[in-house]
Image 1 (cartoon, rainbow, N blue to C red):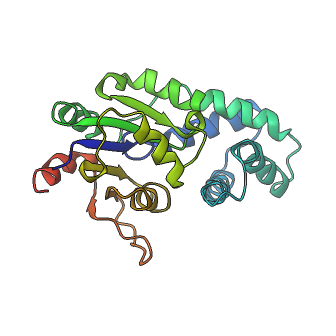
Image 2 (cartoon, rainbow, N blue to C red; image 1 turned 135 degrees about the vertical axis):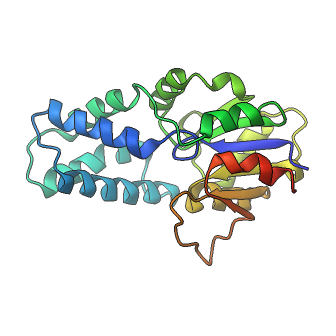
Length: 228
């Protein structure tokens, strides 16, 4: 029986892609740049590549936050300091929130039956602002942001530090729930806990990272847990 639930924040509880789109558009406009579909799409790809490199420990978080904008500006021949882009974007992203469909209701219901923990590779300042706006922190026993923990998912050390903060923790009664195969699911498997992949868009699975369970939204989790 599952007792401890680690739930990823971005694109599992909160809609990060929507928040990212709004924040990036505001950032570019405030710097006098046109947020065309081409620029927005290219940023998303560059950003994804940078986060995957961070997960593989190829770059630092500090490098990522600025480098993704430096690459974008260079590719489009835009003469705006990457550091200014990064600061402006961070401020815009930390304001407001958007829930994934049914996520808030699911979290509230789950909190009555299980011990919930937020898990995120996001930046502390950004996630703090979004969580304050969303007003859901009281549903969770603890909040584990990788920048505060000092290690990123999927590193086993991240999970070891989280587990150490939980009284009476039992890995055989724990599950991580998230949308990222390379971060949440791989991390959970390496940490020796159950894994549940949230796959709202029906993405193709990977043969090398196989979750124990799969759902299309957090709203389906409570029913799934009742069968375990």
